[in-house]
Amino acid sequence: MEKQLLVPADFPCEYGGSDEEMVKFMHLMNSIWNICGKDVVTSFDLTPFKVICDLGGCSGALAKQCTLAYPECTVTIFDLPKVVRVSREHFVTEADQRIGFQE
Image 1: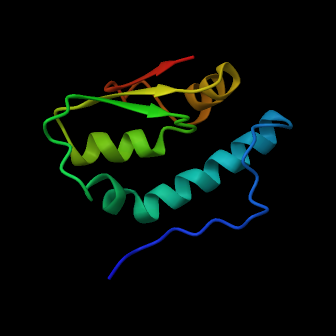
Image 2: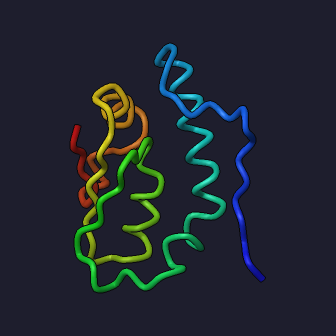
């Protein structure tokens, strides 16, 4: 059976508004990745790749799923400066040593 993740047409895809709104959005993204993240990152064998790049990585939830599924990898998240700042403040901690950011 094929799995699909459907996103409503009116889903907020831009990082506008206040930091509080962005944090709410990022929590929603985390919730989605906590439900289906393992299935997504293991749908292909990424074991040969020691460095994974996450473009538009938002809160780092996908990066965390990658580091859980592939203990030998590191993940670099590429995102906007404001998003990187909020991610570092609220989501990716010092304990996530295999996750880095690039603005």
